[in-house]
Length: 594
Image 1: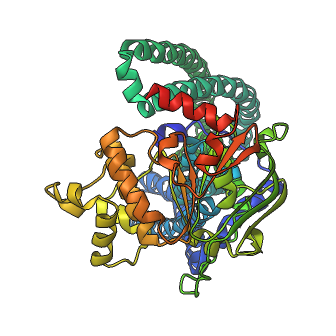
Image 2: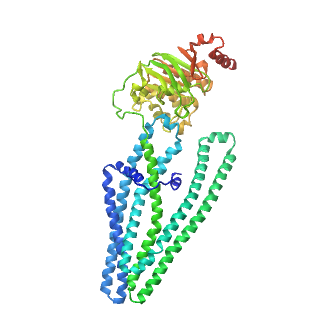
């Protein structure tokens, strides 16, 4: 898919600013820069040997008139030597450019990924994953192709055009002027026609992008598509988009065909005119047949280079556009995350206080999600947060993890403002067990060890036992080496939750956030997960976001969040006794239903 998209990448105008931005890529070359410059020297040598070829061919043909075998042998050997040199120079040019490009792009990919991973949640809430993937795949591939071949080809064609025209003039000025008289005509036509064709290409790109969105959405929600038996509906939807692409692409192809025919007619018409005029000059004795042969070969070189250079220029424009987009991501400000993993981490006790905290999401500034929220969670306490959907319960956990910056107020941990903590220290002392557990596509062992990458096998087994996960893991043929599949699809909801609890246990956090950790489970799984959670909550501050009130009856404090404010606060017994209380109503509703 990336290869297909790469041809549709938007271009950027080549200006002094865009070129200086593109040059920044050389900063990622490190100590491989010299390879690019040595490659350029080999490129110049390749161009020079290519230009010598037509001249020697003409001289070889002229040996017929002189009936000079010795000279013919010498020139033929010279031609073979030139071909050998050209092959030699081309090999080093290509291998040096590839070596330089691969090393540079490896550094660029790493820098881009490193910056992406460190970017704050506000960035990811505004960007689609597919778009970011395209930056790392399509844009980098475009830069790769350009650095490996396009720049070299562009410079080679440029050398052939300039050198060719100079050498043409030395053969015959009259013929050169005749040949060059057609070039401005072709150039103007190419610019006008090219712009017109680009508009069509853009329309095709947009339609292709829309069709890709259908594929992406269908694949991500394939279980829903199948559950509703909507395969044919999706196929029809995709077919409609594809037929739009085909219609536009065929129309654009016709215009490209007219363009290509016109260019070919002009170029080859020019060559016919040159040969005809050259034959007349040869008959008149103004030039030899060998000179005419050299001239025709040079004309072909120059004509072909003119034909190819426009496409190469377009590729360079695309690469500059790709470079600008990649550097836009590299210019985004990452979170301050230390690279020093050996640093002694600050151990947090776990007292959490929210003082008049207000918050609005950066993308929806006008909607205040939290309004002057105040509460205190002391070390070892279980604090439950309940309330209707959209009341801001999950936002509290996001703010505590510093995924977003609060609008006003203060959050403190152990009496210290959370913005005064090193981000790694703060998050390193917290663990979250979310409602929708995301596992990585590796083994069960790797997923549990994600909480502590250097954990021993013994520690992993202990964590699995405490999380009530050991028995079901041992039931798999591969045990801890069982692959969980993408996002953990090979495991049931309860199994995924218990892996997440084992992961959190291994991390041994001071503050634990349970975000509706049992809301989507059946009764048996809920019982096992609840037992594991009881083990997990021992000796640490727990903030439990819950829909099911049965899971939080034993909480030390229950906060009822309604419309961004804490409207009720107390134990289960205290809140159940409040007349017309929100908690009492929620409780009656849930327990009468059950």
